[in-house]
Image (cartoon, rainbow, N blue to C red):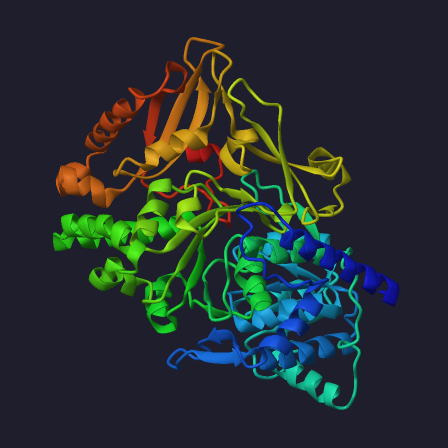
Length: 602
């Protein structure tokens, strides 16, 4: 990129900051963002500002404590790795990163995207056949992977069917069998930098070009490659923290997979932009243990994680017989907290201890969450909010404010500054498709011009989500456009709405609502629900012996579904239920696959 282009990019970033600082939107409160043109410049400026701050926390050996890595140390490793990769002939190439969340994954992503080439984060839950297909489709020249993927990519490279030239094991100490070791490459590159080799340090970034290629994992099973630029991501990084504050002393607890843009932008790049730290969870079964060790202040979660924590907390409260006391304390705290007395922290220490004792922010995204669960955590004194994003928006589009009196738990959030929203094809209730416009919207789908044209029209991204926007630009989602069931009277039925109502039944672990043509009729649509029961709750009511009888379980569920049906209009009533014991088939993002026939069965 020329000096003129560089100047233009900075002018653009400064214009973004000026607009944020001059915003009259009452929800744009924290006007502390600095202009960033690209992720390389973001990282360099963060390192100069926060050099000795902890950037990453990780347990590198099973029985060792968490180690802290500063911004300065991380920058040296990234510069070393980037230099080595370029010296091995990977300049401008597509380079994939795959594996468990870790420091090596993060530095590999940054070493690629900050000057080497185009980064392709791959989903660690995919099988070999799917990974091979994506490597070919994305024209990937090198893969940096954690140890468990060594055989997969070695066989893939040896087959000669892919463009793979170089493999790097993120966990290996030394090169072996033609597979490079991350650690060796970092040291090799650092030595080159010391000798004055500046190939990576001086590499120019084009903020508008495709620099990240992300494959979505939709419920239909068709993966689309979303092309993102540095500018797409940087616009999100500058705008989101004006609504929810991030401090330099915050510690983000990283548990969601890094290849998803939600975790990548919000739980990885955002803390690095703001001078905060990232602590890596060792895996889902270690969440509670790691929370005690790290004592983080922020966590990004999907509803499943927050719902699980909520259920466990409520179960323990009921077992201890303190349900009444907890309610009284939380009610009283709403008054006392206004005069600076936090009763929750004093009297409900056990609940705070579950989160490590210092947690302040819980952010839910990726799917709908019960507003009552958010309210419970807010009443405890946490900042518990939900946001809205899509891979195609890098991913942030809306976020709830972090001030309790301004949160709207039923909304997915307030539109981010710098973006526009409109609702098209509205029905009689004002519900239609949510469309978004802004500098964070993707460049398009990789090698899919027809698919790109379907969703990008005059700069507007048609999300496929159905919903509405209120007068203050808070977005409400009712369901996905492709999932809508058209009832016999022509009315729209959103399966997500009925699934949410079913989730409030204590005996329901998960459900999927679908439609079928009523027997003996060619027109009438029947609403059906396949339900996976929460057997622990069922046993608590029926007893162990009756809970093993499918007829008894179904009768219990029907009793609750009948109660629910009494509150619904005729066209929304659930007429059929299937009760299943095994898990639903899901995407790697843990969403139920709606169009898989077996998910409808018992």
